[in-house]
Image (cartoon, rainbow, N blue to C red; front, side, top):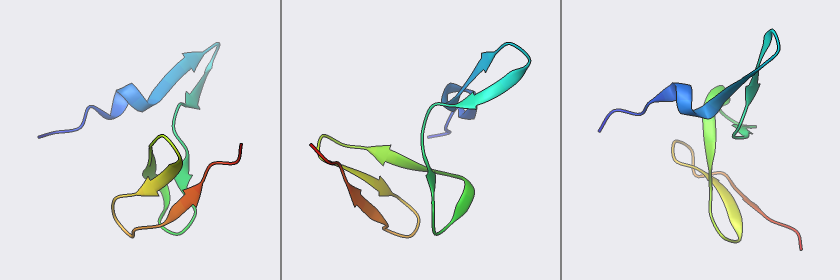
Length: 52
């Protein structure tokens, strides 16, 4: 299944804004999946838990 990458950005004025966080290990272009209690990278497995 192909990902529609343009769904991860929004145009505000003259600039693009990321709607998802980038993975701190993999760098720009690798987005973190948002779960109920955490953010996860599908490539390297990086996990960051949400704070209440």
